[in-house]
Image (tube, rainbow, N blue to C red; front, side):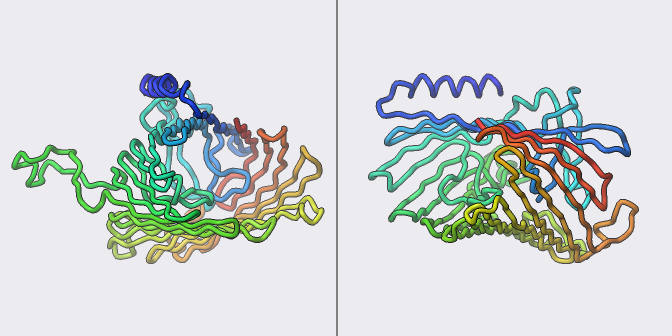
Length: 386
């Protein structure tokens, strides 16, 4: 995969470097950290907990390369997640949510730097009719009708083609056909038995299609989309109030793709939403930011609601103490046991931290975290933008 990525970038560079009116944009970031606890006396690569104000994801290195010309261009992203201290050939690391329960895992290995998963998108595009119609092809990423909030949510991706229509300024209409949620032929399908298809071939049905739209101006943005496999999303952001950040994004998965079940073991749909309200008082002469981040998972017989109030005070241009409390409420405590195996309907954690800012591109945070469902921990995180 390393050779494929490097070859693709090299070919693009040779093909476009001397094009008249062309422009290159190379950017990205690196973030990671170390966390330990006094009880176990061990250290591990920091795996940030969802919602944590100081976190926002596990260790990551990301590189974006954009080439733009008046009528065509390409976009490329390389990304490596979950690297860290464990340098053995393969190490599986469990990931805990803010409630202390396991929410997944990732594999740390030497090979994780160069696998197919590192290629997040690689797409070329062409513009027609003064940019009112845009055609895209490759491994897709939505840059026109996705949400602009924390998760940049979209109901599309994978390999395929996409068309974007911009009838008026600020309005984007999109249709895509991709492998994002496609069905594939199984060995026992009639078409495979009859020799009309091979096992693993894509079924060209309605599930390849994603329709979406977005409108934005200086005061607000609103977007939504639907993948015909049964996935929908929506987004709204308010921009009209100075120093206020308010946005909400949500997704819906129907029962056939949610992988969720109710108490009777039946498939059930899932709705997940994220909201952020944050106000910067610097415009009023006070170097303070305050806000709250909300997260909801709504599933029949098992709703989870989290919210994270946070404060940040800038003593000067370098040092900013921060404080966050995370609170989680469960509708079904029996499915969310505490660390002693007891049923719980509520959990919480507290995180004081200090952020050090080095210029405009780098931050370091030192923090302590008390978690009701986990061992108290301390650590440091680093983020560098380039």
